Length: 552
Image (cartoon, rainbow, N blue to C red):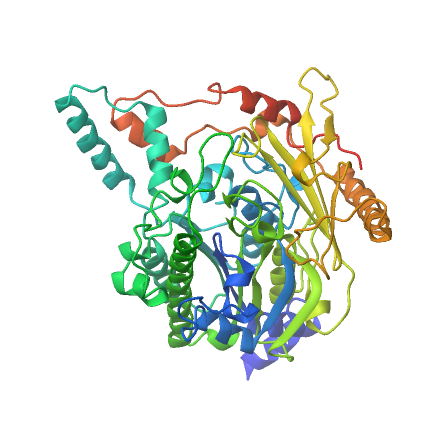
């Protein structure tokens, strides 16, 4: 009786709030799943059926998740490679806002992350990743109680280097230098199998969770090239292309001269049948990742927290298979590389199984999850909560994309481009950088003559040309309408960017290696790498500092 009286007294005097108590009881867990390099049009929920195994469900667990939640039909990432896209995912900011446009920068300490906000709200937080661009050296660990890699351990990697250098010595060759070691670590991620390790880490965290709400981030990398499902399970590879008898196995995919030239004129060599086999391998790897997402869902159900958990599944970017005459990603901003899958399941969604047609962005994910779980907003976010869309509202929204990258097969110098899309139009353009210009201006250039419209813009009508294959002529009325809408959105985007506060550029530069990588090199007798080790591209990136002057 005394306890009840005291509690009532505390309520009446304002020391305890009934609403606060109820809110704590109703706090939802949040699981954010990132699937690296998975195209929107290669999941079952978007209509994909494997070419040589149409009876096989490629993504049954994501498909089932969609039946309980909502599918975002027109979602876009910010770029076509992992690092900036994931930084947008975690900060709710576009690439030009968070500034991590190259791997020379880490997250500005002034910018808050989703994990930091959940931690401040009383959540336990954990993140588990399986690709080198999710390293803590870029600032992704901010706000996480635990942030770990599922890739090969530093101990095992060190032993591999020792063994390789011993073989080199026996052959009279020089040992690997530190640049070669760093490149090896990166290439290993292309054939490493990490989904089981990611699940092991994530399920351990779920097992240790108590009554406090948790935020769990998991990153699956196994669908990223190389496309070698036979290294996972030979039966998995055969399942998606049982009749194949050729000799392409998907290994060394991006660097195989049998696929296409590695230098100009970049001609394609792979046959259509061999290409389709590699795509079947890609499907098999997506199926493998989907299987582990299903295992993660099973764990949440077994723990008894499924009914109190929000889960979002999203990709960081897609991949090209010669839709625009090349392969891979980080090269263009065409739809196959930047239009992404996005699925949300939440206990408080009433219209389960619905599909959202409005444009959504990868930088809307963090504001949405924070809003649904805590009714709070993410400080400084450019993205917005999609709760209105989930409730059936109609929102006009457009999406920006950027690339600031080194040379690619299609760009011999810097590859600088931007893009914009709304529900109907696409606008793309490329830039050249005048290093002698003290104002660091970027100048839009006319597209390749093969596809030129005598304009710096590629403009597409997405309703009639969803694959962005036929640019509109400048005298087409749709061309003018697209640029009018683009210019309006661009002005608003620039107004937002002008309000963003940034630390000094020097405070956002990183060592070229993580602390773990430096430790491995140090244990092998190599000098560690510092921020003074720069190349020409780094210098350009530092000069621009991620915020070039661009006009429309």
